[in-house]
Image (cartoon, rainbow, N blue to C red; front, side, top):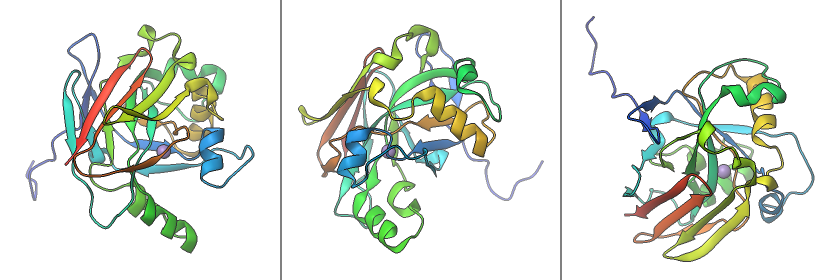
Length: 231
Ligand code: MN
């Protein structure tokens, strides 16, 4: 086979506890999935979950024990962190019932849904797509994937992010408006999930801006930490 240009390198995330790599297909993200974050964004009440996507090559995969780097993106003065539980899909499917969702999950990871908040807000105001605010280069740092069997209590885990050692966001996964299983039910009604899909499940309250030189350290109980510096 001849190609017009070299095939892109596969995008993969290491699995904890083995030498396996998880090849990434798509990145789905859930909007406003914690009550207190929805409030800080100006919304109340339980609306059906809604979704947006990031390109797979927006990932910044940070190996365990290392500090990754992400470039401060262009066109923004409001580069926000959103710490999130990431669900890795190992078994695909359509119209997956929440009760069956667990068998579709390969594992979990710590991720950051980095956001150009000023651009996202401008797009919201104009009723335009969020892509420029959400789906830019290096907008999705994440750590390794821990197999689901190793984190049976993920639903009760704590989630947090610190910037330069100071707390910015701290909450619990049980505060999700739509839990992981319900999110998979809704998402798989709209798209056929495939092995390799990642779901960023939403962020708790406390989103705020970072600047060049800041180091973010996020964590979720049982999944270790994710450390990334803005350069
Ligand atoms: Mn988010």
